[in-house]
Length: 87
Image (cartoon, rainbow, N blue to C red; front, side, top):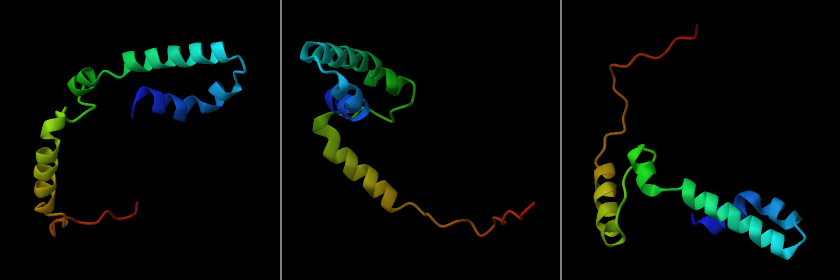
């Protein structure tokens, strides 16, 4: 989600409550600058918040690879597991 959409989604009521057009634009611009500084994809990837950064030209092949890996994954629970008894 881009800065504009995220800010509109989160701060819509506060933005709508500002009656002065110039003040509203300044407030939105300040929020967008804060958002851009906070959302650094490379930093988030380094902190393992984001799994990977995929370049646009590699996106299709990456999605195909990940869906193929997920399709073959066994989702059944082990028969060796024991249920948790109420305590």
